[in-house]
Picture 1 (cartoon, rainbow, N blue to C red):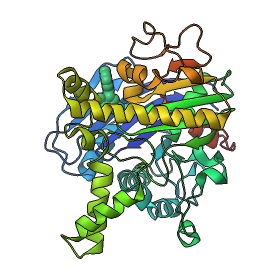
Picture 2: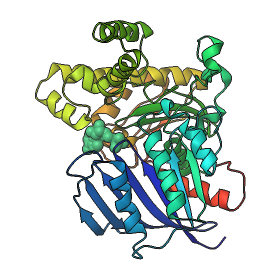
Picture 3: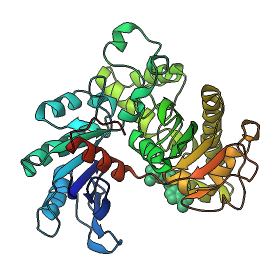
Picture 4: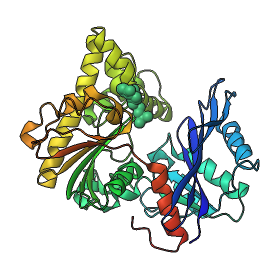
Length: 403
Ligand code: AMP
């Protein structure tokens, strides 16, 4: 296949990120990247940088909604200043029970993905909007859905099944797992020597951890929705279901409308809990580290809950994998928060995980384990856009998508 410009569109709840690569059979050359950030605010950001990180565009527009935000992106991409895409890859967080393969987007596929919006309510509606816009904006250009749930499709039934009545399981209620494109990109970067027993901790504002055997996902912490698993910035993670019932009963004292009550519970679970809920201050690790340095006990407790929970999951995954060859930290906290890595690993010596204090004193890619550590510990930034391009190139070539 001759090199072609491939555009990647990656939307979040309040941002649309995009990048383009010149991609052929074995070639990947970044052309540019950009983002509109702050959707829903008066002072958004819209920037584009070239492959050498030189700013080509830097604006602070009002971004009242996603339509205005996407219009800016579409205008720039159609301006003639940038190569017209030959193919487009869309990051799709959740394909639900029926869309489990990465594939070419059709209007019917978008409808199907949209029908599972409840499983990733912060991400799916904007991705669906952008897929529809991209089909009409670039007629004839093949668009592909690249799923975060795809990497987790190898998890066995014992991991994916939820202990609930079959009636609900039949509606697609099961564990799916998220951050899959990030995990795949770590495995891709480790090739050709992918360790047999690997744990990857993706610690960002959303946090999850996966057990990977022979490059394939065995288990992951997130479940039906990205609110399951580890405690993260604003989400509870796994929690005693009795807590949800207690909060729901409290909400029911203020409304008799069941939908309103469910929405209020959703807000508590996914926007007001986690590091923010326990600290009562912030969901941002940098703020919490500053508060801890100033002696704030709630911030200390929130971060301890975070690192403690991650250490517990690592212990469980070592048991599932029957040992451990490598632990990888990635995501904004995994890559940059030296203290979190040290605190998570502090009690894991019995599992063969030992950090070297000096080596750990870095931000970005590095090997941080001590010389005698049985498991290697590394920091590897994810390469999600590159992974999406890899899938697009394979699918364009008509090959099955076995990354
Ligand atoms: P992400 O969602 O992957 O962008 O990660 C966001 C999280 O990474 C936030 O909690 C940030 O506070 C954290 N983070 C980013 N940079 C740093 C840093 N230099 N030190 C500590 N935490 C950081």
